Image (cartoon, rainbow, N blue to C red; front, side, top):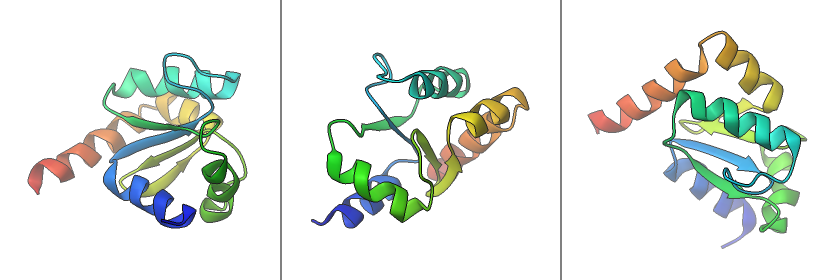
Length: 109
């Protein structure tokens, strides 16, 4: 499977997916750490991909998403954004609503 197909499959199969450096329990950069901490205030139910373990995804995802940096948060197949956007949306109580709606869509299926 080529890298773009792998990325598309990950995004499609995971209602809430964050691409980070490291793991949620052991982030390898400050931005990934802040993003995961903020995301956890909204939900513990999310998937992640450690881009440090997947150099192909690290290289191709910015082209695919047209978003040059990491982390990248995807909800219901749509790019939400990176660390600053995640923090802003949590502060405005917007991210939790989007995540809750993503799981409501799944429950209806």
